[in-house]
Length: 129
Image (cartoon, rainbow, N blue to C red; front, top):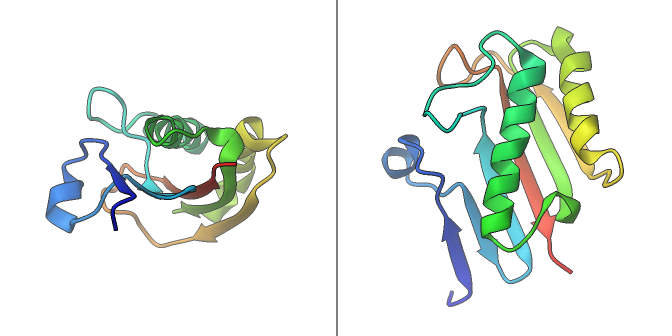
């Protein structure tokens, strides 16, 4: 596929697992499950679902920008949380980012993520134009 663009975040998991932070094919962008990695390579907001959601969305936005898009182009999100009782904190952060965009969205409770400090992981799909 000649119009396939791979976007890397530099995550240590990318080469091990064999994935990209995002892939753009034509006008479609698929952002892989994204957690709250900070610029220092550590998870931001230990124990804080709201802060981790905000950071994950910032990381998604960064990948989208590299692919030529922005949050306004997001049509679907899938949010995975390790504790569904924290729904309000996660929903607040998601709503602050997507209130006017209103993508189709799912919130799924899961047992755990790759590292115990990770509480929230978000996938996003975007369409440009």
